[in-house]
Length: 203
Ligand code: ADP
Ligand code: MG
Ligand code: MG
View (spheres, rainbow, N blue to C red):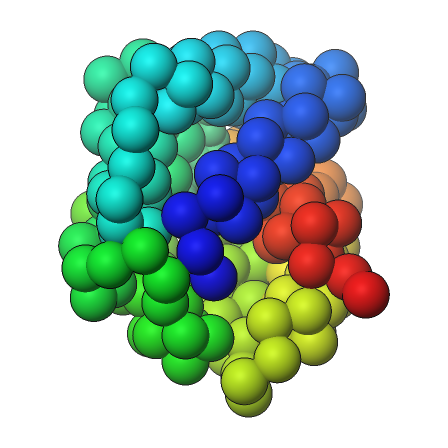
């Protein structure tokens, strides 16, 4: 992955988040406070503005910029969580204009570790970890398009499966058993972000 492709991924993710903002907010209205689409859209719009305003020699710097922007611009839980993920991804990558698929895979896992450390969610707690963890586990091999496709499928499956889980972290956990039957908004946006990578890498 080169600098241009990293930026293209974030741009595709921003487009997808914008197109699905209503759906993300609807999911959050059912079990949270109904702002996930607004939060994500505000954050990714700011990310694109920050990337447009800078020049980047290193793939890692692109993701660090995305992460720090999300942390500073999004008030909800998702801002610090996604922000930490992208920042940790960026910091984990070797400096330079291009990274290999295994380096990207290791970076994505560093992002997952950052989310787990910050939010304390375990797999099965009905959070974005339930999409992010299977995506990272599926992101394998040396072919970016194939790794992205497997990761996106795993994230989508993980996001769907949160509907059967009781939420144990975040606002949805206040509902206890009543959160069961509702798909987690953050897991849904994580799946959108991984799916966005397939849109720009598919051959
Ligand atoms: P807020 O809940 O502050 O309004 P958002 O609506 O933007 O923030 O994001 C909610 C999403 O954040 C949830 O659907 C869930 O996926 C994720 N989330 C919340 N708390 C945690 C946590 N402790 N660990 C991992 N993910 C979390
Ligand atoms: Mg919310
Ligand atoms: Mg909120």
